[in-house]
Image 1 (cartoon, rainbow, N blue to C red):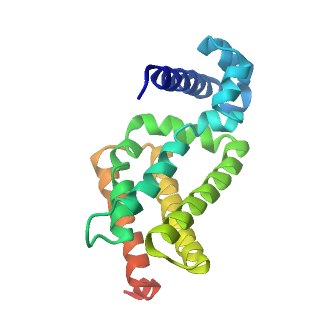
Image 2: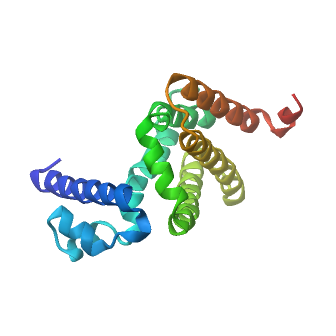
Image 3: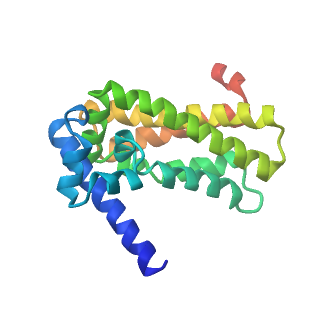
Length: 200
């Protein structure tokens, strides 16, 4: 990474950090982009150069998440299934999603209809990314890739929603993490071995 790229990344992270601090204190809907810009010591134009919308300030990790999903599929180990690769990627998030700090993130979403609507858009982007990766890596047809991608996103979204539910209920730590990992494994087993396993 060049010095210029590192500086841009630092600026982007600084803006996102200040935005999250304000959102956590006052709620997403009560903070303006101008206030974020002032707190971060940049102009509103600079904020929008890095984040096209106010909602993108909150979901600042989405680009990295999209890249990680595609990389998991393209970078699978020999003999490793797509399901196993994606389950491994999501499993790495369990500790973070079961930390007390995640409860703040969950609360901000819960209190904002705007963010919950944005979440739907984000999941659509996840589906598009997975569709493209499956077509490129496996040579799947558009239909097969799209159906598989939407099924995989349903697991991703439910995993995230389950983590939010536990966080909002005040449950965190090792016990919450074990439960979340168990739910994630069950969801992937349903996909990998067919929904007939619902009766198992």
